[in-house]
Amino acid sequence: MEKGEAKSKKAGGARLCCICNERRPVLKRPKTLQQICRECFYDVFEEEIHQVIIKNRLFKSGERVAIGASGGKDSTVLAYVLSELNRRHGYGLDLFLLSIDEGITGYRDDSLETVKRNELQYGLPLQILSYKDLYGWTMDDIVKMIGLKNNCTFCGVFRRQALDRGAALLKVDKLVTGHNADDIAETVLLNILRGDIASHTYAYFKKLDYFSTECIYSPNAYRGFAREFIKDLERLRF
Ligand SMILES: Nc1ncnc2c1ncn2[C@@H]1O[C@H](COP(=O)(O)OP(=O)(O)OP(=O)(O)O)[C@@H](O)[C@H]1O
Image (cartoon, rainbow, N blue to C red):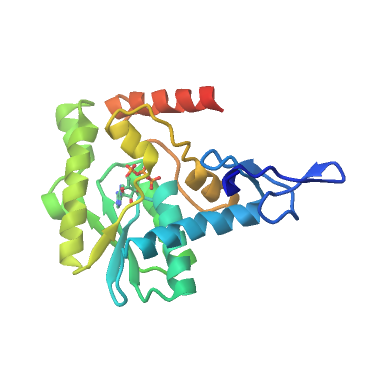
């Protein structure tokens, strides 16, 4: 039996975390089917990320690394965990947050407030670059001109370029983003479920300060249908 499939033991009728065998489990990891407690979840989640970094030699000591920060849960988890691991394992990385302000009133201005709080909470300097500065217009301007039509397609391409330009401008060695398995599944329209709710659960348990509102220009985006489809399949599976 694999470690991940280990059954949690019962003590006095209460099931215990199958890793520490001490505390009550609070979740069953879809990836490993382990019933684990909050503390062990933090440990395995962080250790898995550390192992990926080490095994794939993702960074070199002294590198300047920008974290693409949208204020959302994934990039917030990324910023928090990477800064923790950098400190704990002495990676020697010069980390900072890089946010792109697309100029979406009522959405990005609010999420940037979250990133500004994260700057103080995690002690990571924040750089903000705007579409206005880079391109001379905002997404609000574009939508005013063309209406609610394919906005995410353009915005996504411009954001990607803005991140690249920001990285070059700020002379970073590496740029990291919080793209997760759901994003990949949506992108390639695969209905293979990895059950990657770990980062969401991590953010929820750790009470990380993140922004969870959908962009006001995105409800009609095709990606939204793929996202809903994947969520429906997840609900069926669990
Ligand atoms: N405005 C932005 N500024 C900087 N980085 C961004 C921005 N928007 C997205 N990113 C980066 O791209 C990743 C994936 O983008 P996506 O649109 O899926 O993010 P999100 O849903 O807004 O938030 P998150 O994925 O962080 O929960 C983010 O995790 C983040 O690293």
